[in-house]
Amino acid sequence: MSTDSVEAHAQDAEPDLEVLEAEGDLAADYIEGLLDIADLDGDIDIDVANGRAYVSVTGGGAELDRIASPDAVQALQDLTRLAVQAKTGHFTRLIVDVAGSRSARALELKGMVDAAVAQIAAGREAVELEPMSSYERKLVHDEVAERGYHSESRGEGRDRRLVISRG
Image (cartoon, rainbow, N blue to C red; front, side):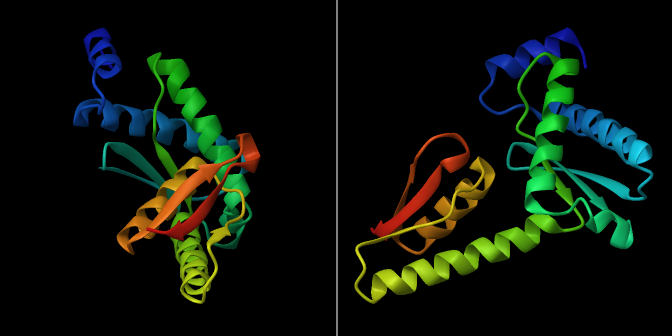
């Protein structure tokens, strides 16, 4: 990535396609190196959507499932973001997925929203959800807003969670 691209990225609220693709390539290279070290198989796919690079690791079978838990995927994402940041000199919002774990977690979060909305419809003022990552909170905020309810984040660090209430 050129110096001009990095400077443009730092000034823009949403990076351009070239910058996001470069971030995805750097992330894929980093993850490929980690998979080699761990002696794990997997295919790496890169996509760009919603102002983010998405890097997915698939096809590794049961061996890959060992690193597909939400905590492991979050740790891999954090490490990958740091590696990309070290190469580019700027923060990246890239998303890492392993063996479809993000989709599975999104369905789980939707189920939590279903349950919370049902409790509110039954008379509760608000429902507090379990702590979750910023990406997960964003998914829940979007789902809650789509249903006409209100959500807000509370807490700090790893204890940050959402509270859902009537709109």
